[in-house]
Length: 429
Image (cartoon, rainbow, N blue to C red; front, side):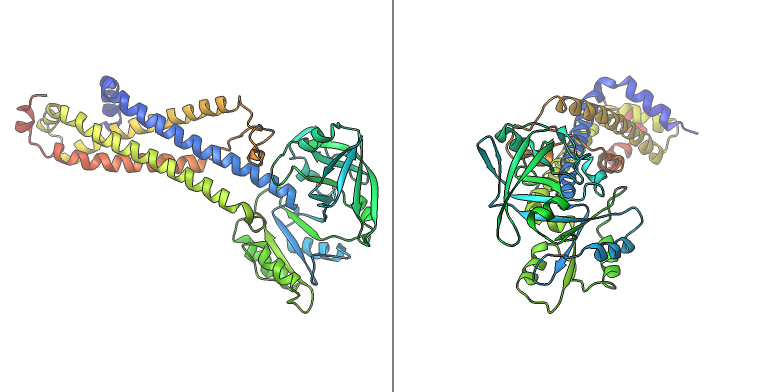
């Protein structure tokens, strides 16, 4: 029985000078492909985590009668808790439009975009994933503490423990000024973070003069795993038994526009998935995915064309060896299998080296902070790009490289293995 693996490995080692260029092409192509894939994975993972913190989890439950409001959210939260798996975090939120409100400190004014009232006890795990520069959210619940972005802290020139003034307009139209204590400073200069601040929900209710259990959003967070896209349909069907539900939307404004226009006779609610909340930046996500797919596809084509064409030349130079193999009784299929085994081991070792090369790229990348790029923090973790590895994704990339290249090599071998021993031995290399 022919030991194809042993013969292939010995042949590669004996002719390493001929195969080294193919090995380098495969290693570099596989390494850059993996690096691109892991890099975009990490950037999108950071974006998704920031969105979860901003919107309160994987889903939002919103609705009401002509406006987003729950005057008493306790019963709604109980029904939602019964509709989702055990361990799901169901937390009310009060988002206050702060475009006409400001923070003040020692004569310096900084306008705000939105103030988010959060139940920090319930959402403890979610806020533990924030990119804090100083402090954290562990002691904010039930206090007048506030989480502000690093940029706001820099503009106000405040640090942890400083007291700042917050001026806002209440629900009944009065101007109210309260003191906030800086408990945490987070690093985020993106659309989710720069002018967004977080306070205790009860404190914001009292300041706004809202009812005790008032909320205008309810966040639904899965701490242990992320729901699959099709899971939303399952939860939608369950919620339709308890509430008058609007159909699932790909853009939250489809629901908002109908609700605010008064098209419903009574309270109507919507389960808004994270992607529907992020529709404004969906084109950025799609563009990143397309560019990654294009880069990986281009590299695979380069590997396939480069290796298959060069391999054909190498095989033709080994025509005498092929004649010897056929003269001693090796049939055409065995000869093809032997040569394909060589290409397989070459590709496999090249992909393995590509993974190592990818780790090297990541190590170098991790030495640089990219927070100096305007609005790029949306993709960063504490100012750095942190690639996210995916074994299954890497396996798919490797399989595509190996399968397509071996297939291309197979076509380039057809002519060589058809030669007779006499013809092969008369050819001069």
